[in-house]
Image (cartoon, rainbow, N blue to C red; front, top):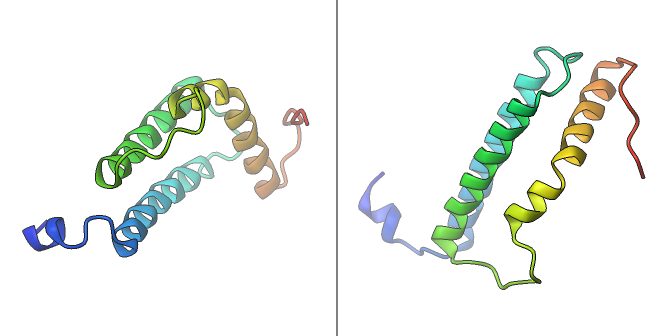
Length: 109
């Protein structure tokens, strides 16, 4: 990475868009990897690696743009921890929906 990139418009929309595009690419990679074995359930280890990587990427964005204004007592990490089961179930549901597979547990509303 060159110095011009690091010093040019550190909080610009273009730089934020680059960060978002990178994050989208990583998410796309995870989705693609999950579809290699679409009937396989998402393991706790896989979910933990996914959440860890997403936290790192969000921290990376936050380092560039500064922390967002607090919206309450709950941190992003606490929110992600609280919703791990929901995320895992939605991932499984999405895989089953994309492959037409049945047998996945239905989501609670």
